[in-house]
Image (cartoon, rainbow, N blue to C red):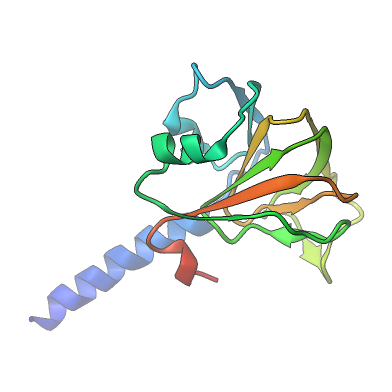
Length: 160
C-alpha cells in the first residue's frame, strides 16, 4: 500500500480516538425513562439516570448495546474512587444507594478528588439505573448490593 494511505488512516484514527478524551465543560445530570430514552443521550458524555425500576440490566444490554462487549461484576471497595475505563458503566443498585460522581475534567490526585471541587451525589432507589460515561470517577461510600455492567466498544479496552 502507498505510504500516504497509511498516513491518512493514522490521522483519521488519531482524530477518532481524540474524541474519547474530549469532555463537556459543563456538567449536567441527564434524566430519562425507559420509554422516552434516546440513544443519542449517550453521546452527551454526561451521567444519565433512568427513573424507572429496571429489574434486569441484561435486557437493556440486548436492546441498546447488542453489538458491544460487556462485563458484569458486583464487588467493589467502599469509600474508594474508581475511574470508569469502559465506554459506559451501568450502575444498578439492588437497594437504595448513594453514588458519588466526579467528572474527568476536574483535578484528581492521589486517588481523591480536589477538595476545592464539588462532588456530585446521586441518590438511587433500588433497581434504578445510572449510566456513567467514560473516565468519570465513581464511589459508593458503604457496602451495598450493587451490580455493575461495563460496556466496551472496539477501542475502549485498549485506551488508557
